[in-house]
Image (cartoon, rainbow, N blue to C red; front, top):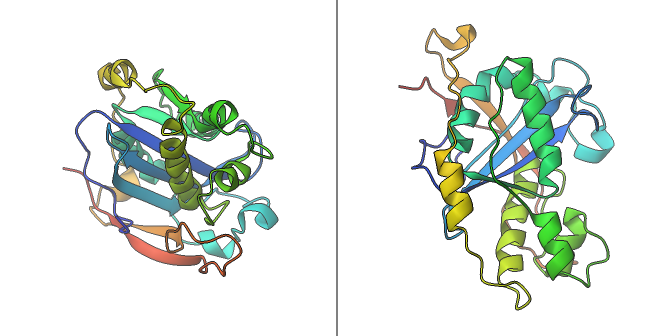
Length: 244
């Protein structure tokens, strides 16, 4: 699970938990600088993970928030270079995020910039779940919800840390007594039946050379609140080879 290599496409079905870090707040004016996907099966068990920093082709934006510097993205792939594999990962799955419409909007605009239209897919928002099933939360941002659920420390504002925490929050919320038994059958069937576009490898990769991924990583918690968390480190976490 800790490999940064792109997972082999899984059978249709399940959930894709997504998170992005961006150079600003506007999907129309700003760019994705980090993306992560955590794949869950229909029982919410983790199947695979993918994450990488991206070269936004300009300033990285609010380093004081996401802690990404210009030096961090030097040599990182561009969005177009990972887009074919992202489509493979997301196809056939319910899209999950914390304020999922925001993550969806940024990814939608990135794909639109390269001429790819996203299909309409079922979505599940953990912020909405938290509003219904974590009434004691001091707020409904991801950090506040994770705290209220007692899930411990996670590396906030790293795409993989946020995606993992969102997956944990999803599991927590649907197991609370106030949450009625979830019937995922219909949205999963709907997601599996949505036709997704395919995208050819960019010309820069047709030589067959692998593409390095750069992942910000911390040992996955949960870690006790108030304890010393592990450091977040930047790693060259593997490579994407050409698809068959």
